[in-house]
Image 1 (cartoon, rainbow, N blue to C red):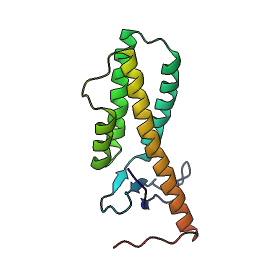
Image 2: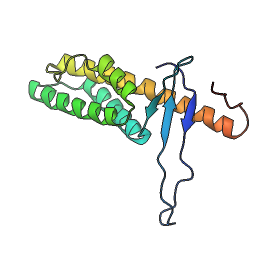
Image 3: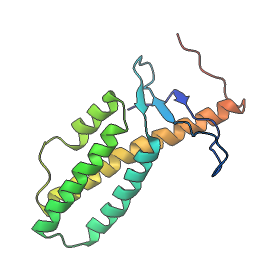
Image 4: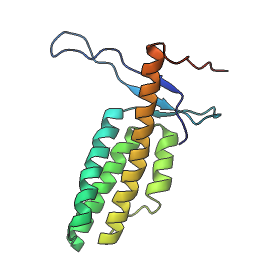
Length: 152
């Protein structure tokens, strides 16, 4: 995924009933020296999925997983992956599928479920770290602490 170099961010968040419509936030990550950009279209969904994966993965490390539970967890993992894919640009969604779900079928054994959850948790954690880094850069640029990079 590389580094991050640009952000398209929303303006102020509306109060409960101030009549201002919320704006969407999209975070653009682009590897250094690359002309392609990867967008996170729904960062709030990515953060929720990542939090869910953290809790589930922690529980999976301690729990005894029956074959029936493994099947349910596999379906849940596919649903979380689908939510992440819908939140990302095609390039990031392709990376997600390529790195975390090499097999199109749901994991079926307890060990496969644990590995799949840990893999997805790690990938999503890297994405979240990149998003947070980019938001810090954008904030520093907005405050005049960092120069805004020029684009060729």
